[in-house]
Image (cartoon, rainbow, N blue to C red; front, side, top):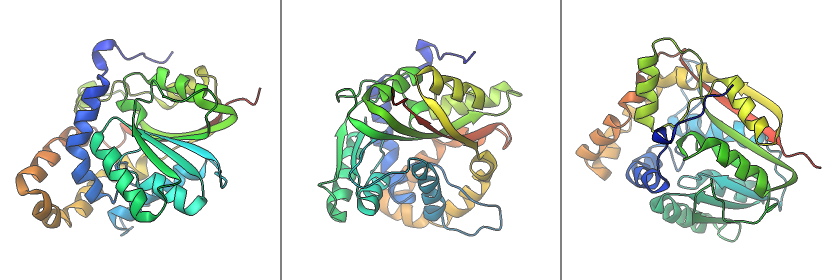
Length: 281
């Protein structure tokens, strides 16, 4: 049975929003408008950080099979680059919701600059209480946003509600691969403000419990979390540039805020991508 996060583990939406208002400006600059993880094929892969991050976007959104004109919800949209790319390249209509005022403003500006403001809209909102009627969307995307939310299971039920029958959902996030040395795991969860850290079977159980049919899943942790040292090496190449824009103290504070991310061993934290569908009937 999946372990339910306690009330004490969960963060209030306003607190989540404040956190991302603080960290998103540097993250936006460092990862070119996307705050999620990276994907490298190995130590010999010399792709820049922006390209490695874009690979995750392509892998996750590719499972949705989006078609022009479809309505897509980007739940926890970050600074909007993924939504803008989908609107521009695939001709879909994307609605992004986030609890960060900075991210709403940045994503809106990004859509206007890309000429897709008519197809990519962003608003302040909580994806555990989505402000849209039943069946409003053809597809939902959740790139590393669910574990930071107030209630994972409630969010999945909301996704099911606002999807039309036969609609699709694609999510990616961390998974627990080894419970040994639990202090390392707890430090990781606390530092990243995660209310839960399901195993792969628990992830699938929760998605199914919300009413979805799981159609595809993969655990690609070795090429994601397993490349955390490569991330540091690659990101450090831009440290001086980022410090010049935001200040050295801001960069140090940003880095200090993610120290807990590096505490677990490479084999303890996985990265799961799940594609599922709301039954047509």
